[in-house]
Image 1 (cartoon, rainbow, N blue to C red):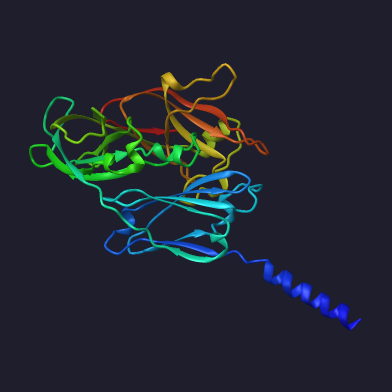
Image 2: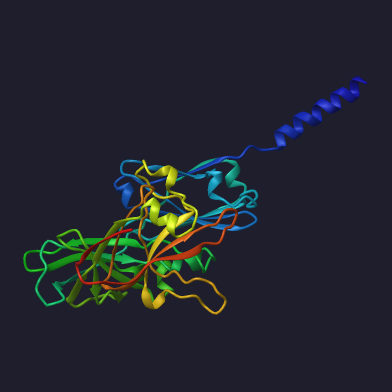
Length: 343
């Protein structure tokens, strides 16, 4: 009997010892780098693959990669087996690292080694649609980082673009800056079709469409003239009475005294008229702009000039698919126009 008790106790101790507790994995941003300029992307694998990003904050140098918050994952995701890291640090090669199951059971802080990349100058002039120089405007160069979706093996992924540089126009609309020569980075060297994007913001604070809006990866660039077309701004509000008239659930009624984003069960979209359709399978196409509906019924959006339809989308009770309801159709917005719609 004593032998049996001793053996049982030994088995319990051994089992507790062998069942390792989950570890922690942290990434540290090196000194001399502004943390808020760094972009951290993750591919997390369990029964499925989940691609996510971690928002970096000024003066915060350490970020937890594992364990992550469970609500981010589908309920059937299962145990995390591996994490693949992709990290953009301005002025340096992209950092890539793979962490297997054994590493996720340890306590580990990853300190990336950085290798600088060369830079190339870029310059030009910003003018409006009539050719007049635009002073005190911001011109940004961004990179869509489509290579990351191939790297993660997640071709349908959609990561936010990385801002490579910000430039300010002078009194004559001239701007200049430096961007990385991405061909110096082995991560990008095998991709020959990568393209930078121009985006901008005018002195008035309005966003703008720039033409040309993109350019390739090169060693040298000639000065470029960018034509800016100012976005239009649309604002408005939807009343309880109007939503009731649509004969749809009023998910805002109990939230009217709050100024916060509307619940995910109801959305408001501004869709280019030519793209507002259903395909032959009856699937709604929603290639447009989020009108940023608030719980108090207010909404606002900045969009390029054009003709749009304003649509509500809501989820009926116990149904995952959204149902589209037109609010106003054929809204023509001109360059730099401000339009207010009350319903």
